[in-house]
Image (cartoon, rainbow, N blue to C red; front, side, top):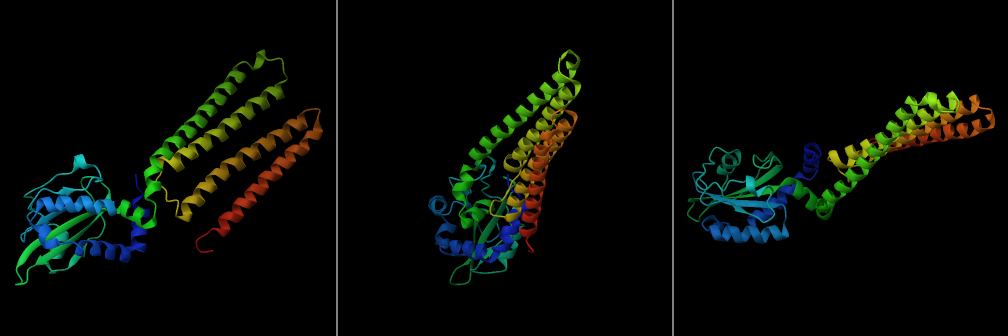
Length: 306
């Protein structure tokens, strides 16, 4: 799962570099030979995809926009089973064909678009080929996967390959934390239902229940944050906003838990005979204030306009 907004933002920042790279890959090929040879298209796409894993497919069109051979797919093509080989398909109405038709012996790189087969952002480069006599020979089209292209340019290919494994680990940790919070919640309800069978005083029982409920809330919020940030959402670790949001959410959960526990300790100390323990509650509350001040300073200093 990819965040299309972040992906398009990266594309806009590096648009010139990306267009130059794709155009250079296309123009470096023996396009005239590829135009008329299906086997050479297959061999070329396999060879190119080893060096450029973001290259997905190649096909050729005649001068009227009709696909001449079945589409040549790379070994790492996304969702190969959903692809249609489309020999004889009429692509004369496609925007990239209409744009390339206006140029001769030059390469046109399209804007990012959502692939109908994979629903991922893609780019295409189209080379309009003319012979020495000026006759229209056809078009060579190469399709590129934009997420893989951006990862390749940023050096994140290995990281993206390991990301599913990291997501599984985070999912197990988050689910375990939520399980512990549910267990604490059940224990607090059990104590509440048996409150009159206990031999302890009412304040001790009440504070014990509140402590378990508070811990359950804090642990649940931590597990939910892990699942949302690391498993369910698509985040960009190279973008400061992603790290900033994650740190803010984790620290907020910790600050809430510390503050509630400090207040409970202070109230319990006031109601009990051991009033001296109130100082520990005060220190905990001050530590929560310090965490909050530190978080506020971090958010202030890490602003993009700062």
